[in-house]
Image (cartoon, rainbow, N blue to C red):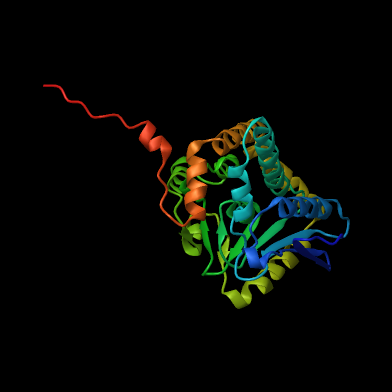
Length: 277
């Protein structure tokens, strides 16, 4: 396995551990981390000696979503080239999610802290999600004028419509227990037991037939993703459109300036009320 700038990887007795390693940035996603993680997952899938993957985060967070510098760069870019870059960026994230979702081998997320926005997507797209009681989850994109487009393409295969709307439209933060009650977390585990539990689960999976596990995952995927390619393409386009919006510019600026946003769309759509007698 290669060395990565943003990951630590380790293989032992058929278990491949991938540690997101930007603790000073709460393992936030940037171009390098997205590329490294996608490559690491593809390498794991192709390896004849690795049969189960465990994903976790260095430091106190699992993954805090998009990196602040990444967000800042997006709102400073404009013009036709910006639209192309927005699409490439959305396609990279979609590629990461699709790679994780379609892995032919089992994956386990050991969520050691907050998993927010894209970080929640990574945590919950694994086949099993173990989380410490202190972990927090949330699709918070609407808070900064963005949309949770790419995660929504997958989330609807995991939750009913009402629960999906609740999480994506409110942008609220969930506790590990609530995420467990919704079925997004497999088990809540005390912090000292998190990695031992993840490795014990991996050992149980290793006792099963690798061919049968792969066939089962492929079959389950066929049941749930008949429309997934079209959904992902629609999500990519929606993500590109959202990045070009005035609300996104304002939302990210307000977030970076630590103030409440003044949404342009709220003012543009406001109409004076009228009454008739």
